[in-house]
Image (cartoon, rainbow, N blue to C red; front, side, top):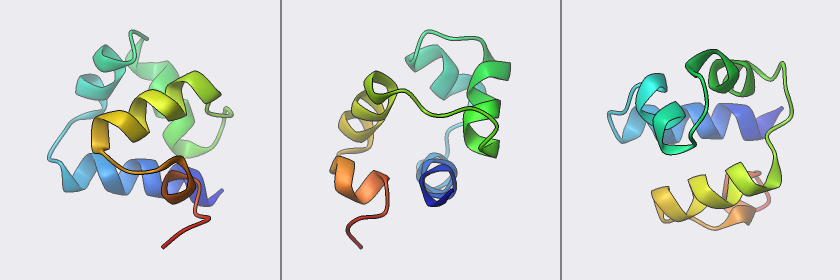
Length: 66
């Protein structure tokens, strides 16, 4: 569950909307919202793209690294 909080926090820290990130990931905003709420598992390809976008490691994104 930690990954979903980290994804939301990174988005908010970068002053992006859920719509902005959904567009980046080429998905409908409701799908992205489900990832942030932890209702759907974030796919690896999306995690990689988000890590690259926010310039963080995958370990950081999933909470393995502070």
